[in-house]
Image (tube, rainbow over all chains, first blue to last red; front, top):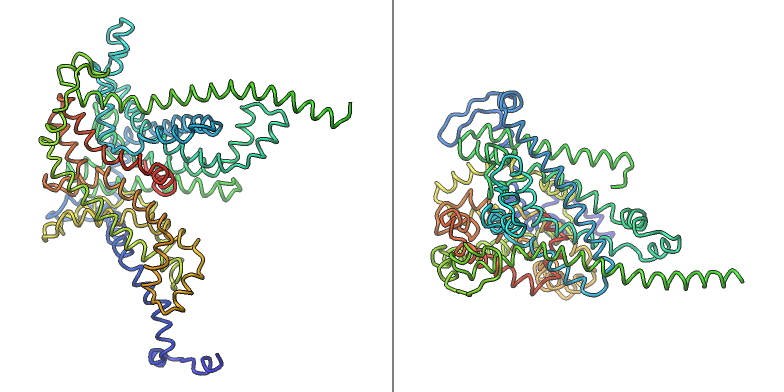
Length: 316
Length: 295
């Protein structure tokens, strides 16, 4: 040890000539970074650089490869917020989507997980079956439900038949302006809520059983038990998923694209489907990029809200 | 009556009441759960029913079980949906992405968990921040870059796999790193004493002991790639390179009225996933809960 400190090299040149130092550098710095580099570089080229380019692109009127890009400052954003009427409508649809996803799947999943947590036998079988829709591809789920919501051959028509009615339930849920968006949300939720239930169930099973015993001794009924033991117990999971689902609500695309493509007449158009049309069908790359930046600003805003609440002492 | 007697009496009364209440409540629980199970399963049952009916029968009986079971929808869908090609493509996308993700993610996670070279914290922060950037922010420039590379002669399939690997990079690094950190270092030290180099320590000691982590990442990434639709739609234009999802999308578009055919096609797509899911239920569910939470 004493020998080592005595020999400790000072200049870079000396360091490099020093065998021990070189070996240490190799083992503790160079090799680890060689291990990290491939994945990091791939990620930088696929995500980080395009993300920065996206911000720049949003300040141009670029129309795609082979076209000249003019720097136009915030013109795209001005157009988006003040001239493009479809943007406001799409944003409204995203907010309606968020309202749906922050209530329906959460209530469903909380209710189901509570029921499931109390079941001793067969619990795992229920869990597996209820989870199945989550592993299906969106193209398949969309096809299944497009058929089931068909006005002539779907569930609605079957109910009408059963009740001797005509065209009461058998309507084109996806083809009507007033029901299209919520019908798609329903389809997406059929696929999605299982994972939420599994996450809540896992959190509930981590709550110490003594807390429930204590609640029972205090004479708590089922609701009070849920309200004062279960909910606080799963609070971190619940709030985290609230944040994630709120963010995802601004990114919704697949199910809308696969069922109505935003129609009829823009009734189910959201920011992402609009971006897709602007950037990839109308070749308004700059304008589409601006929409992409706006989407990430909304997502960042949601994160900010949660971080602030956490700082304020909300134990999220 | 003593206080103790009172408590025990209260307890027995409570317990008797409770066990009666318990069983009544569990009937309620099972009823609710069975209804929800029906909600999850019935759409899939209808799909399976329709995949073994003729279109004529679907017209008369669109939801119920088949009266006559026909199987020709499957070979028809397989043929007309070009599944022989697209299944192979999808398997290739899945296998290539999993392999690259596990090798590169494993290397990076090991370096971050064990070596912690200078800059590790900044790197973790980078991946944390980057994982919150929505695809929509970078998809337009990414699309143009990919097109430039494709025009330069790079295989679109390789580019798609690279995009998938990048998209799953934060997940694989975080998950594998957490598994490796939990591993006691003594074993690795012992191997080093025995003269193993870094690479051997990783392949002989760390990877075998963190297999569950690799399995989880593999399942989550594999399922994600198998089901992925949008990026494949964007980047793959040659029908002979389509994965099953985009191919099925065009297939449904073309045979819109032919429910028997499209139902059989849907069954073909979900069949491999269902088999794997039923075989590895616990790993699937817990793995996805751990790291694959996506809409």
